[in-house]
Length: 237
Image (cartoon, helix red, strand yellow):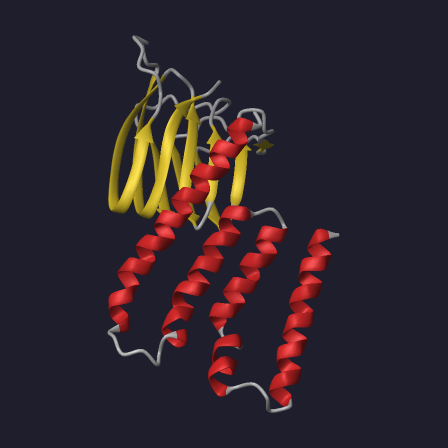
């Protein structure tokens, strides 16, 4: 019901703007802003929030607002190129704040570790590639004989549980993550030795596992390539 109501409000609003525009009452400067791809992004973001995809929705809205500002402020005299970096930092900061608030709220209601993972289909293939775009996903993988994993995330919040993943018997196992404006959490078995290498722009991927004197059975090379992204490693529980 809430989704239908949100969509209905959007349709009514669009109809009102079209009516006012056809009657000649809509100012050209306002029309240029309303009927733009930036407003389309904001609209999609509102729909995503109505579908309980908070992170993706807020990111889209912030992007739409960011690129709408030059049109709104075009009558002011200043170099608009100077606003790109500050606004980008604001978007990143807002994303981090929203992520932290959502995570804190989930812990308060004791739902973070209790949320059910989406089970993936078991596979015998040695190579797996996954792409996530504007997604909020929590999955438990069940693959065997893996030796190469590639994950690409764009404007997403992903948590992957590798507890049931069986790696290849070969010495070299690689996981590569390409992340753009995303947050990735990997839950790995306690007997995996992870060698982490990360590079990019504003990338922070932390290892939150408890150190212990375990005879590691498998060495995994984890490569992170990111832009304005974060993530963490933690043990499966």
